Image 1 (cartoon, rainbow, N blue to C red):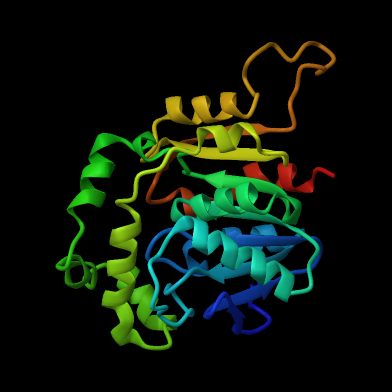
Image 2 (image 1 turned 135 degrees about the vertical axis):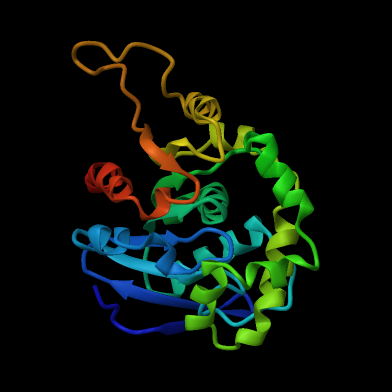
Length: 265
């Protein structure tokens, strides 16, 4: 599916690049670290069949010019809230993957009235929710990471859309920094007012047990739903089979799982 066009929005003193696909109720789509909207592959078109998908490239990522400020989930959440206002929307559903999932979650925490519902893909609610080997990889990132990643598809995707390819080291430094920041948002999760769907792969960078704990913080999975479903909450949990942290974002099963939840009035 072809986007309407590449666009830039001024928010909080920086520029965010974004693309729009499809028509209907708005769905803001947030990619993972080092990525862009293309990180969702065929899921963009699948989601845009029923929604107006607004694919945003986060601070310093993809089409968004490098920003001279620290990268933090809370700040980027404020960016998304201001973008919602800039686009003339009262509120929107938000779906985020990995780093983008953290931004989506923080947007729901910080700006609940602007978020219709959340789909959080491979998203822990505290930093220690990642497997230890994932945390070790984040902690090891440093000045040499930019050059190393230039040999990967992540850099090739960035090179295709970035306004200034030479800014790649800025992006890598900012992502390396934010991935080291500790957090535990469990109390904030308990207070979320909008429906939330958690999606994780069965071989993800976050263990299924963490997703279950997340679901329980929302009030899900605490009792039998009953024959009449009276014990159901508005929240959902999906564990996708044969999915890792490196391919769940492009798996057709992701859109297939999320679409019924996104279609719920």
